[in-house]
Length: 270
Image (tube, rainbow, N blue to C red; front, side):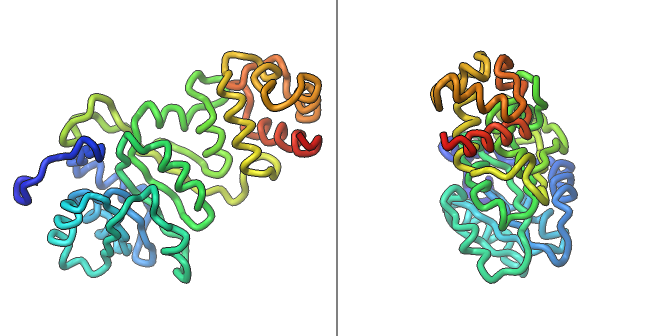
């Protein structure tokens, strides 16, 4: 950064990972090899990028900061298997870029805290063309995504993402591993694509609507939390068909039970 006369930009949520051991863990968790392609989100100064290239994989880096793009072009000028896309990862056309390309790429990134939620759901839109994701997230977000039913951290994002991906924590990363150091800890998380979604097949949009409705009122019982979607009688009917206790709170309902509720909802045309 000193060599290029740069400082971290707060508006881009830039916290650069400087711990080589964490870089190594991320690269190892990617499972990448000579025949793989990695999409790196927020390549920054290229420090993680170099570890990813060392796996033998081809790396497509997405970076929105023009100054950092200049750094990447300079620092990785000799890397033959490196390709830079200057742009916003939230707006990137993953499906279009991969058209005609063999295989599903691995997604890796140290995600800016301020876009974590939107980016996870952006990737979920194209989940069928993307391989595993290895992402650095806030520890609090990682706790939520890895939570089990009944946990206070369990919520709508947990259910929506874990229906399509198996989510596991790789390691926790302290603030001192970054420059500048954030005020909170982070965690590296693996999102492995499932061969089949958890639970019964349902309409994804309707499922997402049902889950969001339930957790907007997470302290209420299911019969009351879902009252905004249909009449009390109809909600009780869904619960009966799905074998879900209408008197429990949403945080105690599993992914499979939520899909069963949505199937019941579709069956009764609500």
